[in-house]
Amino acid sequence: MFILEFKKGCEDWHYLFDLAAVSQNKIPKSVPESDANVKFLYRCYRSVFKTELTAEKLDEFREALNKMQADHKAKH
Image 1 (cartoon, rainbow, N blue to C red):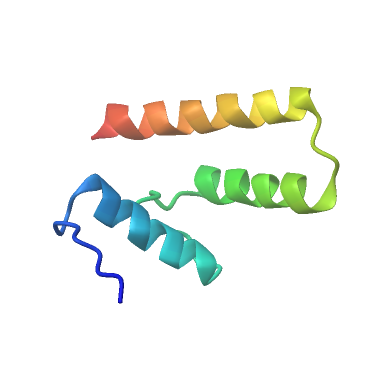
Image 2: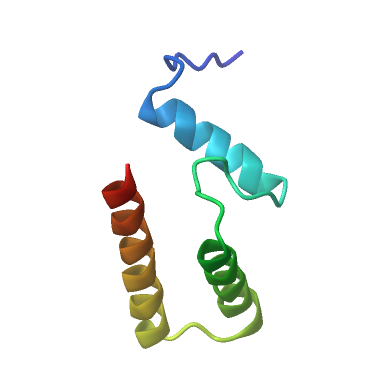
């Protein structure tokens, strides 16, 4: 048996719950719900599953993720 020893509320605990939400095709609670984020996540999904990812597209995706994270941190 494998036992996880995360303290509730720690970064790993939040990451685990984010992964659980994604595995159920849900937006993790740690992602602020807004029209911009929903559109962004839809574009991510469409990019990953519907088109070929080039190095350029991956860089654009990384930059968009970094901007979203910076915007979120600035608000909190």
